[in-house]
Image (cartoon, rainbow over all chains, first blue to last red; front, top):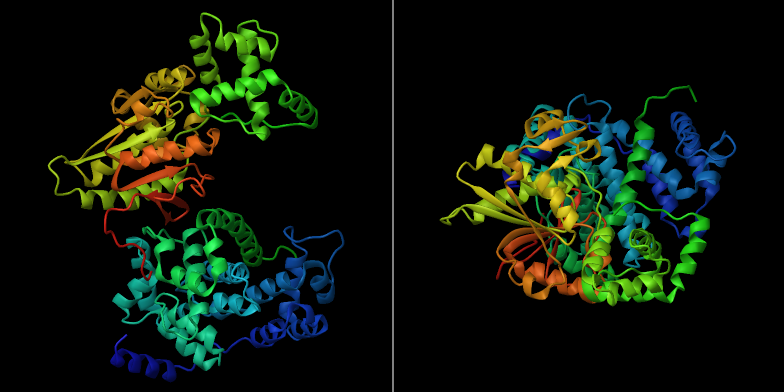
Amino acid sequence: MNPETANLLQRRVNELHNLPAMPTVLRSLGECLGANPSDVNLERIVELISYDKSLVAQCLRIANSAMFRRRAEVDSIRSAVMALGVSRIRDIVYSCALPGLLAGSKDGMAPVVFWRHALGTALVSQHLAQRFEIENCEKFYLAGLLHDIGILVNSLLFREEFQRVLQEAEASETPLFEVEARILGFTHCDTGTILAGLWNLPADVSAAIERHHHPMADHPNLEMICTVYLADLLCRLRNLGYGYYEAREFDLAAAAPWRMLQEIHPAAADIDLARFTLELDEHAVSVQELVDSIFTPEKTPA
Amino acid sequence: MAAETLTAQSREAADADLRDPGLVKIRDLIYRISGIYYQDAKFYLLAGRARKRMSAVNSKTFADYFDHLTTRPNRDAEMRNLLNEITIGETYFFRGKPQLEALSKIILPKLMGLKSKQAFKKIRIWSAGCSTGEEPYSLSILLTEEFALKGKDWTFEIVATDLNDNSVCKCREGLYGEYAVRNLSPQRRQKYFSPEGNYLRLKERIRASVKFERLNLQDQSKMLFMKGFDMVFCCNVLIYFDGVAKKRTVEHFFNGLIPGGHFFLGECETLFGIFDQFRLVHFPGATGYLKPAPGEETGGAL
């Protein structure tokens, strides 16, 4: 992006005050889960969710859906947390809270498509971080979850142009950011970075948003950037992408981010990418099911 | 291979077979001749197929049948019969959609670009272990359609090989039941098949476009002649080979491909620990292996 476009973009973003605010639950729950897994405060999590009545209703609906249903009916957030475990509750809470940000936009990317890719990337980022034996993988989940928030901005602020980008990307089977750069002169990485600044997101999460298509070897948050880069790409290759065919051949093992990760984490060298993608297929099915169960219209009131 | 599952009862019988020295000798014999190796967990498959042949030649025990295979005058013919029984396949048209999509949308345009300067604009594909022909014929239909659209001056050659005589004969007949064509669109069904009683006969044009040959992938001297292919498909065949035979076979495929050519395995197969000169490449929903062209730079920021 040239400086002129950057200025223009910043001005446009500043002029329009209808950028979504960061959902409160995202910050508070993020902080709560950021602690060591052993000292996650269940009571606090229950309390945080309870502030938002519609969130409570949605969580209960999903906890009682066919996908998660246990023996007994789940009738409180506390029992939902107990029955499903903290990480599943986290997936559900974020899935209920975040796609709402897209609700105001009729055009742009369909919330279900956006969300499937976001949640998929979050889970794969975290999974990769675990495989690299990185402590505190929760950050990687968050970075994966938010890496494409620029798409929210583009959908809301640049409706017509972005609609054209989506159509063109689908028709030409080209990665989204390439078409954005051509048609808009900037990408969702640029607008995402601006939103990350407004939301005061942590530096490493913001770095992943900014650079997940263009990793830089000397970046201080290289680990996070490369992990999200890889998770994003794997999701796009295994049915958790933007809902259209990207006609590209990828040699992941030769890609610079993968080689950089292997330098940082020797455990990465043991990952068999062929098998990893096969494992991911199973993962993709459960992400699809979760997202579908959230976006399926309620049949009975909770 | 036909789906054959184990019940608790048959598992006991399978354990008994595993201890039968006659069957162990048959397994080792098959391995020496074809490289097909039945691991202990797959022993019941071998036992079932050997029994079919045993009842045909009126042999009561595995030890006696081993004599049929080694000392009787018609031993070579019987070995051939047993191998035919073992390698009976089960497949259908346009199985492995992501693979075929990668072929038509990504690999073919790339190959056509690479070879556009050549005098003979021709794509050569080898379907190794073609079973009853569904795979090579699907490839033929696909290439026929692609070239009709964007490669009028291009031709293709598909060589399909199998160890099984009956399969090769069946391929040439081009007669298929409903199961084989269940994935075909009504348009393709109508365009490429004519009904014949309860069956569908593939039209002459497609049948004539595939060259069928009987070939044992373990026949070292014959394998040396398989050269100059742009793509090799070998789906669900290597699983019956042991490590050494697998490596040897894959090495032949590698040598048989042009630089820049692609190798495809079955959906759940990988080359992990078998052969490392191919590069693993990802396509949407599918993985393949690339024989790198000398000095070819792959990877990079995506």
